[in-house]
Amino acid sequence: MTAVAADDLTTTLVGFARVLRAAGVAAAPDRLHQTITAVGHLDVCRRADVYWAGRLTLCAGPDDLDRYDRAFAAYFSGEVAPGVQSMPSVRTLRPVALPGTAGATSSPGSPDQLPAATASEREVLRHRDLAGLSGAEREVVRRLVALLDPVGETRVSRRHRPASHGALAGVDRPATMRTLLQHGGEPVRLSFRRRAPRPRRLVLLIDVSGSMATYADPYLRFAHAAARRRPGTEVFTIGTRLTRVTREMRSRDPGVALLAVSGAVPDWSGGTRLGELMKAFLDRWGQRGVARGAVVVVASDGWERGDASLLGEQMARLGRLAHRVVWVNPHRGRPGYAPMAAGMAAALPHVDDFVDGHTFDALARLAQLLSGRTVGG
Image (cartoon, rainbow, N blue to C red; front, side):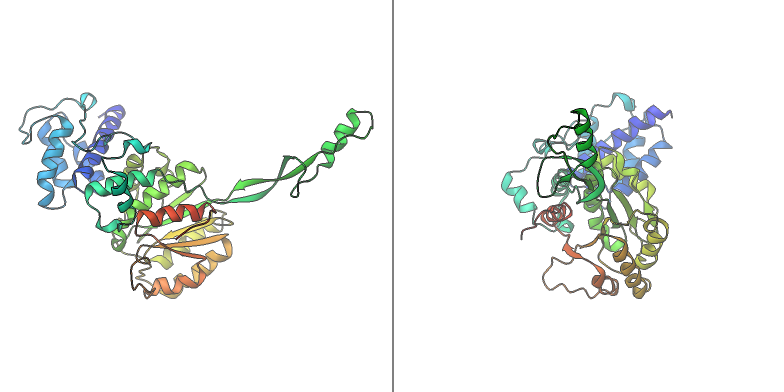
């Protein structure tokens, strides 16, 4: 298979996964990666090969089978029960959106491309727990997350730029002297300058362990929105291993980016070793400047399989390096929650902001917090 054909195949299957999610099939990024791998070993021109490769990898249970058949037929414009007839080449496939999911195969670049949902329905979804959403609701929330603007804070740099007279401006002596010489030493108007603002680096550590499986997708999409809007944003996944996925987040399309992440992360839905991985992050990346003076966001429920005291030590170390440490916990917003998990209890004294992360509204408030804006509610 040529590189062009492989790219076409990936794009086609990513679009099909979007339609499946709108139809109620989870079609998680790790399952989609398995689909692409399976189809790569089959004949993509045979409809039955593509059908069975997707059905065996994308469906999580019997309830998904009927939805999968309808979505497959609608997307590839074929029959509900595909036979062995040949399928058009990947380059000639013409996806068709499912009824009620307009724009399902287009890029989520604007609010008018959201799946059919009234303003009141979207407002209700803002406060629904991300773990309890249906497939169609998840698709709406994913597109809403893509519209967030977590641009991060700014800091004052050592560089100066010209400024008008003001409380924060100082006299620009070199510029004033140059103007004075140009006028033969005659008194002239003073020039002023001020320190220029620079974006503060944003670093996101996303827990992709089994206990965070239902929240990893929206958190990674939030990280993609941040990486797309603020160059220099660093994204890592944590579970049983530490994986840097900054490069995979560079794609403009969040679906393609998450597909790349799923292929790069070997420990999806595994265990959690927060202390060891935080130490690995600080040893390899933090001391080299990635975390120094940055806003660091840790998105995790705080379950620790290793030594919780090690996590506490490394969080204290992170707090000394970073400008600000934000911990996002999807359980914090639930009634009766208390940070009883050993890892969470050890990390909490070294966290500047401990925030909710179980709803889209919580993610929107997190975006405001990271941007230095006042967070209401």
